Length: 501
Image 1 (cartoon, helix red, strand yellow):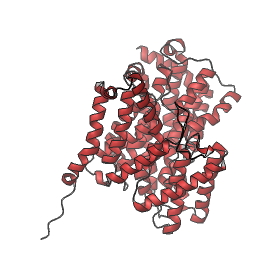
Image 2: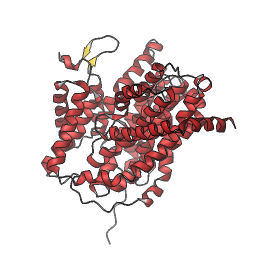
Image 3: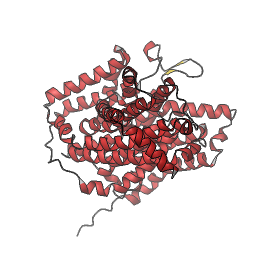
Image 4: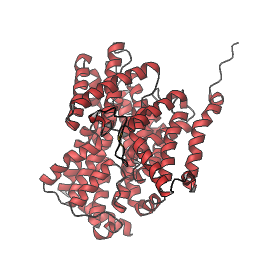
């Protein structure tokens, strides 16, 4: 009964005209921001914080507005991923694997509708889980130390090499390249430069956005020019846009599984939506009978990462609200907002400021419905992007990429670096080296290194500390099995050749 009383208090706050307007406006702005390559939810929330203060919003209104932008950006990230093979943000990276092939098949509308429904399911169930399980799941996060995090990241890379690619050697090579790029810059502990070759601009490392825009957006332009558009979704004749009921029904349990995986990944501080999206996709591929169709336009390959990353967005709010520990880059920005508003997140927040917590939860429940209603009818508008003549669209994509990167850093060196990443991306795609492991290596490399170093400091250099808990040992076993098992099982999982009469 206490739960319903708290929820009623939250809806009393959320259903005011001001709060509703902020939730709807935040959803719309977030969707637009998420669809722009290179911005993403963390930058979008950071950019709009001054707007929250200039409007004179109180703590609850500001938090509702910013989290609506957050969830809207998670929705919007799928748009450019599916239509142009350019991830709008980090978590949307996995959506490109099957979303873009669907667009090339003329099913861009189906992919967008399916991803919208999957995002809704993931975000809605994650919000409900936040409401029911926040105190319990916050305790689970305490069980993950540096050894467990290192094993978790290792599992991500080993599973990537074992299950995500038909050529494990090329996938492993790509992951190593990504980890190598992540090492560029000043060492966090010694302050010594690594792999900078005397270039001052590399002292701060390689910005993830520079790499992702180069490897995906710029290389896509090169591929389009070379193939004259034969291998692109641009200019593809689109089928009639309908609600893909069959795909939604077939992907229903996929959405539920991916929501659970993504939510747990979001609860773990530092893991975030990127890892949640990846683990959800890999889990679905590993248990699917049609695993060979993943990467060629499988609808479940769209539903899994979208449900996973939106569930992770909700899960990331758990450690922020209950422990005061940001679960992702975006929640770190939200945490700074709360502290600026003299609100201290932690276990006592639910007792001292219940109107903030429960008003936020109620507003998120409303915002998820708003996002679904807003995004599905707009599919017809989004798919028209593919009808724009290439001589207009491609220069536009290039200018947006250049403008977005330059606006973030103000450095012409980053523009040159982006072009170099584009050339490397083009070469890698020509020789069959996947670019997704490179991106994940850049994204997770520093976190993996920091976890290993902390583990060694705690254990005074004893490497057996990495296997000191049941959780870390289980993750190590899963990592080794995920990389080695496919080598032996691939011949048994391959479809038998038809026997000639």
